[in-house]
Picture 1 (cartoon, rainbow, N blue to C red):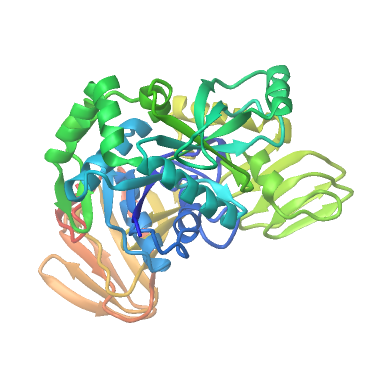
Picture 2 (cartoon, one colour):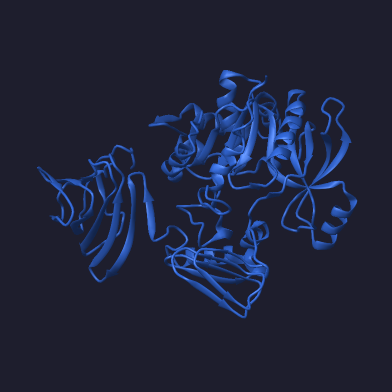
Length: 473
């Protein structure tokens, strides 16, 4: 049995699914279509394939602890988690993975999967993988073409050519086509010769690297330099920042697939969706008799064909149709379903105004737990803090603020200057400005606290770390 090595790309930001998807918690790390996150579903749907090796995951450095925790939750032990210091699109990420795999086996089969896709027919997906594997073992760079059920203008297309003689079910690629207008998309669907470009691939590491060397040696050399100078950081492989930042940012389609003569397409009808916008999530969600897809505390009256997601409060709709309503702790989005592709424009405006709602949620996850803002005003800020059992914050100090900690539940070990104390429920302590301190949970249950900050500046960048088990800067 020939092993297949899944390479899961988890570097996207998912801005069109704002306000749920944000820079610090993008869509692949969210439970959008089930109780598991898109990343967990991506890895989980390979579990029943005996030919699958442990996954190699490539992600943004800022998401490393969240990703590692989500993999632990589904009992998946990655071959490696590779950290990108900056986003450089898919070609460099795949190049790094191919270089890593080729160290042990130059002809290792790579199954490249974005972490944020939905696949409803897992059996059809497995069958397509095995067809693509046969093509890859004969030297082809296989891509998965999704049977186009509707004339979508948001996808690129692949036109199939002649059937491959050495891989039944696969075809030569006649052409890659950019996103068409609606009339052209209708023609594509009616012809039966065009397929949606899924962004999933299967090929041998050696074949991909040879094509990249011929077509984009600059990407290959920069990726190799970043990997050669990489460092191990806990369970992570941290690519060299200077070398990787120097790498051109390019998709694997533009860099290789549209130019290679080895490209093959495997047609697949597997209920695939890339969840590129809220309307796409509405399409794949279970709906009521009026066409509404809802999640959370939602009340509807005389409402049709809406998508409603309530994260914390009750959301009520009356006499409206074709809306997307997404409620979070700090943002409520209301949009027409036909306009949700433009959510990215709202995110761009938030960036331009230097606001933070596109970056983080009110509840901000950290490797030790999370914190959430409750109240703030001039010279003060109040937060809820949760620290997981056995975890600890960095040994740190602040130049501009003092802190008052009150234990709500659990047990806290507090370092304040030279003193170490244990605090239990309803006990509190004060951390003066400029004092070295640390918070730790030595117990077996979550530690919940209230933190009251006071001072002239209360930003998260007012932290001087002296020691950190998570090796953060």
